[in-house]
Length: 353
Image (tube, rainbow, N blue to C red; front, side, top):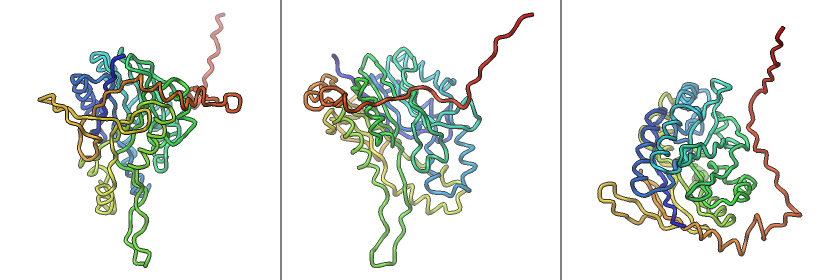
């Protein structure tokens, strides 16, 4: 089996612009495909924003931002997705992309979602994040188990979870139990949990911010080790356009600006089936020269890695947690993969007289 070349796009979206974000995504898909990529991955809610304002500003300041977020969100069957489907079909690539999803049931119900689009342009997996994490609850509704599926593609069996879902052992196990070979974990550019304050007490400064770099890698590596699969960690990139949009209308713009600029940026990297970092590289667009890079963090680019999927087999001798290293008579997991909706409408048949 030929190696699968994965392209992880460590990039910023066009904040609050679905059209521009999709145009940029399609351009990156064609660029990655031109460099031999089989699978092209985008970060969490690449289309078209991650609601960092909810972490740093009072909810009473964020009504305009929520309205903008709704307008910048897209339907899973809308024209923006159709353009991505066409890009996948033309380039013969698999595309994984995070997006803020609008609901047909409500004009302002949103989901934190991810699509895996197959090489024929088909929607292979449509997943809605099971539970919005922390401040995300102010923007997104809880999803369901419908998207806990694996995309069976010519380039491997591909699954994925969104950000904090990679902390959920049952969600991860449900993907392991479907012969997952490549696991995609998507992340925001930063994850602020507190605004550090200088303390005047003898104990010194307050606790530091959440170390999303360490936390993300721990979760992704644990999954790879347990599933004996490859891992794709794909984080967003925070640019000035996003910072300006987030602080707009704030009563404390400088404090929020400082926190946005000083929070640790997420990393994009690859892991092998032991959880060890996988050799990665960037490709110069003009010269096609490959340059070794362990990860991307503070610059926008596409990171590439070649994955020999046969390497997923050997580790199963030691810990096949859905096979020989599991007690199926002791433990049983039931996963409800129905799609939840707010109402079920039953139409009575018409009666002809």
